[in-house]
Length: 180
Image (tube, rainbow, N blue to C red; front, side, top):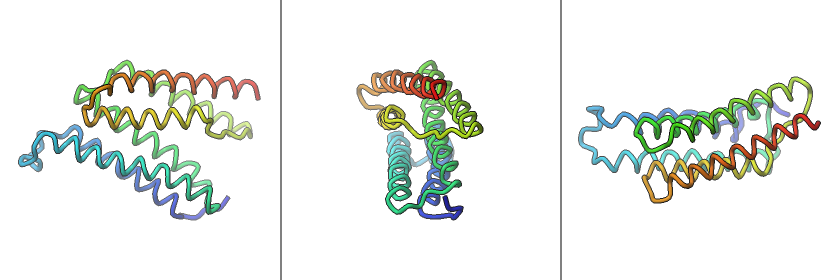
């Protein structure tokens, strides 16, 4: 693995930078800077930022694998960027009262637990690759956050589907860790 700052790593850093920007636009609706904005603009801009950040998640992984640009830095930056984006989305949505605190608590608890489990696995020299359930979980979480930001129908249902997939993928990781 290389140690360079390559295109996938730059995309992950860009996603890290977009997360607080999206959170700011979601929650700072009474800022005098935004006095001329219609209330729907907050959702549109936060949604646009979230979509751009989510697309970089796909492309940084695709480019890293396709062009053999996987690095140790990337193996840290990519999951960090994912967690920061999800955290910013979920916290913002709680603060504007569009997401269930319990749903977000369950999702974030799983994320913290599995991150700890992955750190332990790496310390033990075990390889920890993302499972298909983990990838599906991330996609469904992203779709749910997008629907919640835009305040679209079925957003809450999607959030609870994301919770179920999140807990299931956490079960899979845990089972795999203790098996190997």
